Image 1 (tube, rainbow, N blue to C red):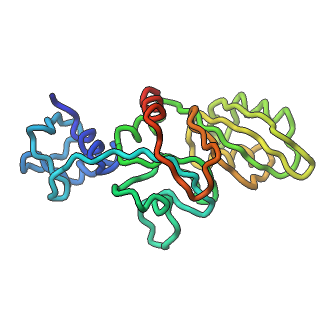
Image 2 (spheres, rainbow, N blue to C red):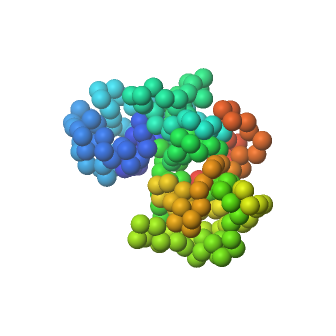
Image 3 (cartoon, rainbow, N blue to C red):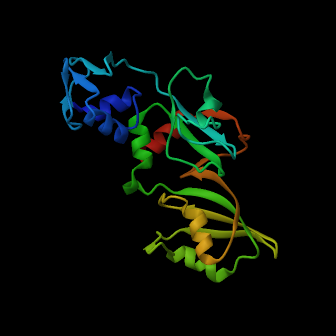
Length: 236
């Protein structure tokens, strides 16, 4: 059975499927000792010899982990500035994991780490519109008319955001807590939305990814996803 080359690489834990496209284009992958630069090439992992940077691919045990990322941690695997990385929290897992999507360094909460590139691809591809829920703390009392604007979409840098769900959890003259569910993942979208409405964001915490809830997992801790959680996310 023929499978796309980038999918084989992703399933072997090399990188996400989109990142594997780039690695193939850079000439870092060989199939039967021949350099391949076409990501969509069909290969048979059981018969073809596939190498990345000269090393043969080996089947790797798949890990699916949820982390409560603390504020101040970054979501890249390498950092020249020596900052704390989310993958450092799971350093005892015997596999090269990477984050599924990103949370800004000053945002905390639920993020998934895995070495399954196909799983990561399905959860991050824009066409799937995976809902992600946050609790946002903002300065001052939020007005109901602004909540209505979030429901209908807000123009940020000339482009309208997708309609989102918003619920005021509590509000005072000093501080408001808003539960916000987004269906897209534009860069710094939450801060930019509230800035556009005239509010300063103090704190953001992601509490769920389409039914997968952070629960009482403490900051800086992780747990393996359960089989039913993995299967549910894979079906999305």
